[in-house]
Image (tube, rainbow, N blue to C red; front, side, top):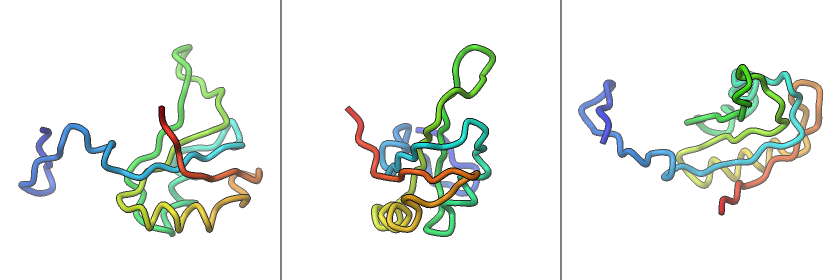
Length: 100
């Protein structure tokens, strides 16, 4: 467990596993975490954004990202609202992330 500095409640080590994840594809290579936060936060509080980068100087060569919400309902709201909508000039594909 990790200590939560905003309250006395501990944060479970697997906190990300308790979130609901969206896969966002066909992004611009220059898209930022901030741009994604601004695009998705209207549909529920975004808990985490992950944009993969390479180990080679941290340069971004991917055109996808993951956005995480605390509730399944907020995840589905964001998917319905943002699929095939423009982010940083490109129409994106937004769907539920499937792992494994």
